[in-house]
Structures are given as C-alpha cells and as structure tokens.
Amino acid sequence: MTADEQQFIIQDITQMLARHWHDVDRNWGRNAHLDYTPDGSYATSLRKRTGIEAIKAFYADRQDRGERVARHLVNNLHVTVHDANTATAIWILSLFAADGVPVLPSKPAIMIADVVDELVRESDGAWKYRSRTITPLFRDDTPTTG
Image 1 (cartoon, one colour):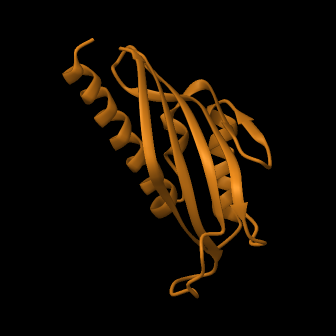
Image 2: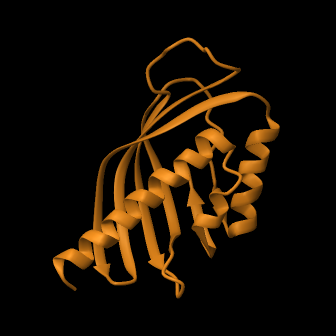
Image 3: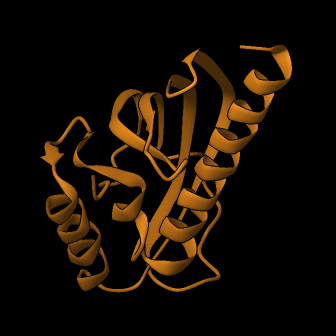
C-alpha cells in the first residue's frame, strides 16, 4: 500500500468519525447504527451492545429519555491502517452532556475516556465499525446514557 493510499484511508475514517458523532450529538444518533457491521459491537463501562438492532435501540432509548444536550469531542486520533480493508482508530473522548435544553450551565467534561475502534471496509468501499470500546478514565457524578 502506498503512503497516499494510506492517507486516503485515514481521511475516510476521520471523516466517518466526525460524521458519526455529529449524528449522535445533533440528530439523536438516528443513523449511528448504520456505521456498524451487522454483528458490530458498542461497549461502554455500563454494557455491551452487539448487532445493528441493539445499537439502534440504544440510541432510540436515549432519545426517549427526554431533552438532553451532548457533545462528544474526539481528541488525539491515531489511525493504524493494517491493510486496504482493516484499520484501528485509537482516540480520547471528552464528553460534555446534561439533561435539559440549551443554554445549560458550563461545567468540565463529565467523562474522559479511551476509545478503540476496530474498522473494516465493506465490499461497497464503506468503512464500518466492527467494534467500539469506550473505557472511562475520568468521570464525575453526572449519569451517562451509555
């Protein structure tokens, strides 16, 4: 694989990551499940969800809880391209979230976590998450929905 090919893959994955969290933060994650493989998993410190339907249900339940503002900030992204169809993204999540409608009081991040994404490219060229594992490093007493 050439350096240019590797950079294109990294750019695709970076763009996917931004699009994914944009959907979660501004659209209740209504399309977030579409970024996972059919057997993909999403693991947090609270529980693991496996399969598109389980991930879709999580985001629907999150919306059903009522008004909430969340911003998932991606920091220190490092993508390792294993080959043309597999990659790993390791990054730091800073989560700002609270129940209610804006404008809410400004506070530090409610959680800072390490995230490991295992990605595969499907036959149509789209990258999908085979797994996402979120491991909290710091958190306050504000409940997360994960």
